[in-house]
Amino acid sequence: MSIQGYAEGILGDVFSHEKAAHTILSEGDKMKKLVDELLYISRMDSGLETSKSLYLTSVNNLLFDCHERLRAIAEKSNKRVLIETPENEVQINTDDEKLEIVIVNILSNAIRHAETEVRIACYANENGVEIRIQDDGPGVALEDVPHMFERFYRGTKGNTGLGLAISKGVIKNLGGSIHFENLQHPQHGAMFTIRLTADI
Image 1 (cartoon, rainbow, N blue to C red):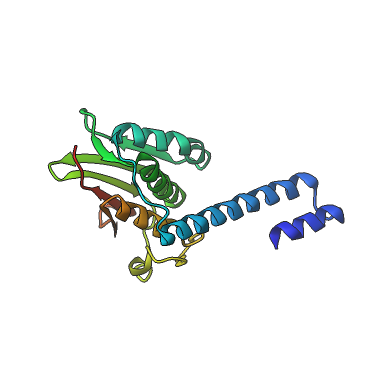
Image 2: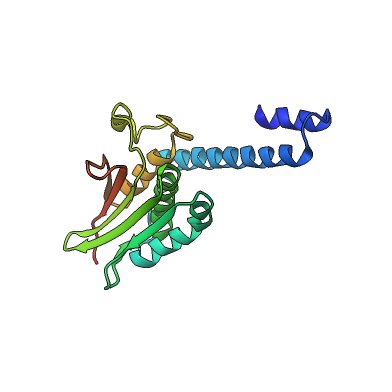
């Protein structure tokens, strides 16, 4: 309706072309994201979206690549993203493209809700790899926490309600788990923890 309204506004000279075009492009991006997510969910349900190609992946490089993809968004909103990785390269057999989908999704959410900064960290141990993404925002309302990974549950300031459901499905297909928690005083904000069990 927003796209239609602004398009009609252009025809009737109600809005400036620049303002209308900006809004139409923005709404178009939202529609594309929603359609892409719906298609991905459909492929997951039909069993077509499985991780069959596992490669030895550098988690360090993957995190830095995801950061670069979202750097402009973070800088535009005056947020900084800090990455903490071990000196030794952390490697794991996984589907790097699928894992990147999850990292970008959670990182973009963290940037949107952060007050000033987002922290990403990864750890390796004998059981696999752990990735933590946390922000210094207000955290998630307690009534929303049990429903965070449910499809179409948007909660406070949510978008489509599909991103976290997709992330959970992807991580499950990769043989891992994803967990959420609100940080406790003196810290504040939200933290997602991804655990992947594989050969390192």
